[in-house]
Amino acid sequence: MTLPSKRILLIISGGIAAYKSLDLIRRLRERGASVRVILTKAAQQFVTPLAAGAIAGERAFTDLFDAVTEFDIGHIRLARDCDLVVVAPATADLMAKMAGGHADDLASTVLLATDRPILIAPAMNPVMWSHKATARNLAQLQTDGVKTVGPNAGEMAESGEAGTGRMAEPLEIVAAIERLLAAVDGPRGILSGQSILVTSGPTHEAIDPVRYLANRSSGKQGHAIARAAAEAGAAVTLVSGPVKLPDPPGMKVIHVESARAMLAAVEAGLPADAAVFAAAVADWRVAEAGTQKTKKTTAGPPTLSLVENPDILATVAKRKTDRPRLVVGFAAETERVVEYARAKLARKGCDWIVANDVSKESGVMGGDRNTVHLVTARGIEAWPSQSKEEVARALVARIAEALKVPTAPVK
Ligand code: C5P
Image 1 (cartoon, rainbow, N blue to C red):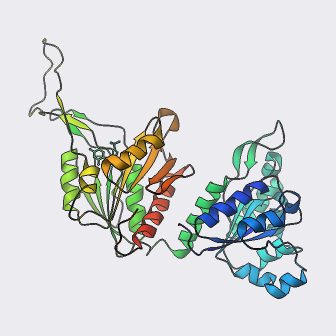
Image 2 (image 1 turned 45 degrees about the horizontal axis):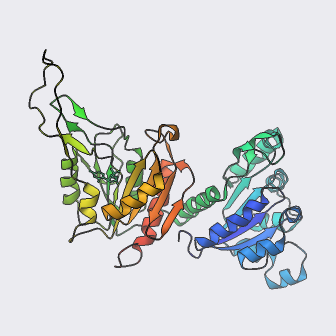
Image 3 (image 1 turned 90 degrees about the vertical axis):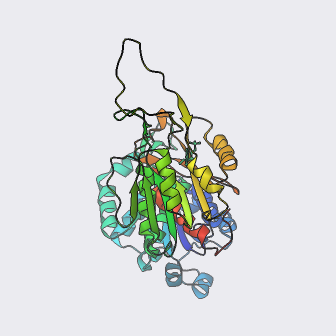
């Protein structure tokens, strides 16, 4: 659970995307959050208070001057008894009211009365979104500290309309909420007292003193994980293959070239509470690397005889002593991503696999974004497409959650 006992106040305003907010409620509750819902009058044209209340597990609120509500809870308590206010969908009209400080219904009054962080997920017709008035209101809201997620580009509900204006998908909104609450709680601290070992980057396997076998890993994802873990207060050891990235601050960085050197550095880095193997280790190395540069001869190209490299992840996952409580592997696949990841989980003996699609079309290799699935013994989670930093922070939040249980092995 990534949002245990978090209290979200969800304001649904009137747009066709409101139906997606019902799924958002479910996703938030799945993650341990409690959700209290306010519907504007227009929202009720799209979803009913009964449906929203049934999914939230408590009645939804609609009226400012409802005697029962005011006695029972009151708009000020609605505004304050939460950790975060989320407006999804946020219409152009509600954004305008927020920017202007209006308070003529329950939603706008609560938004004015709250001292909690506010996240909005705008959704509207592309022309309305790009209108100068909306841009002005958005700029004002951002100045006021309101955070936004989306809107995305794509097809609109109206036939023939496309452009930017689609509400962010529920899982993207969930990821934004997790990030925002982690920032409010302070990522610092969630891993304090824990030691985390991370491998990152490719390995270079020497053919001779000037040539090597390698792969396209940039190390961006592994380094981002190490950085996020350090920011969360962990004592981090980063074992990095050759990359073009600077060493992240606040951690021990060990530079290696080959898989065998990486394994030795990892073993020297144990014990650790958790280990994340994000490196793209070369599967093979040349059986006998030349000690001098191999010369071109008339006899034709040399034959390279390859031998298998040690599997660092499997070696650590199968250790009898000093096995980290949580061993996380990565699976970079170009096809059947989840199926292969599941098999890998069993074969390697690790606890979690972060599976990502590295097919050419995905643009993950060397890129800044990543779309991953988290595969655990409990099941598979599809995470939204996000930056590698966001994937790192979300993974660190999950690791912190898993390590909270004092001694039990993590599943
Ligand atoms: O088998 P495959 O290379 O796809 O497995 C990927 C996972 O295993 C990654 O977590 C990678 O860091 C790890 N691995 C390793 N040592 C190897 C090969 C892969 O640690 N020799």
